[in-house]
Every structure is written in structure tokens, then in C-alpha cells.
Image (cartoon, rainbow, N blue to C red; front, side):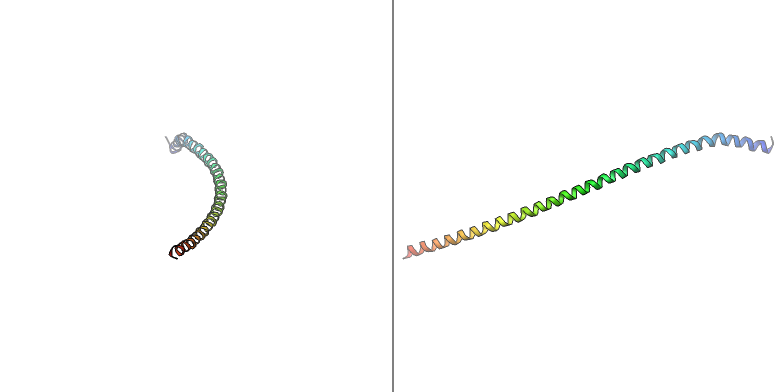
Length: 106
């Protein structure tokens, strides 16, 4: 067997072994690339949904903050009003006690 026949024989063996392997790798890479594209699109859709949900949550929290502020103001106003009434009541009681004490002592 001469060198050319050996080279041709090796080439045939290599092509029969390497070519199917290369084709298999190419098919696997194509499938992987497709999966990456599809997953990337899925991630983009999920990212958009998360953005929308975040916006809705921020709006909801803003409304809740406004309601809490309103309730706080209302509660403070009621406490102030009750405090004034209690002070007025204590003042009237002091006046009546003073009058009773004065009436008893005289």
C-alpha cells in the first residue's frame, strides 16, 4: 500500500467517523440556540409582567399611604377634640368643687 492509498483510507475513516459527529454537534447546537431564543423571549415576557406588577403595587401602596395619612389626620383631630372636651370637663368640675367647698365651709 502506498502513501496515497493510506491517506485516502485514513480520510475515508475520518470522514465516516467525524462527519456524523460534526452533524450531531451541529444539530445539538441548533437546538440549543433555538432553546436560548425561546427562553430569552419567555424571560422578556416575564420581565414585562414583573414591571407591570411592580407598577400596580407602587400605585396600590401610594393609595394606601394616602389613606393612612387621612386616617392619621382624622384620628389626631378626634384626639385633640376629646382632649379639649376633657379639659373643659375637668375645668367645670374644678369650678363646681370650688363652689361646693366654699358652700360647705361658709
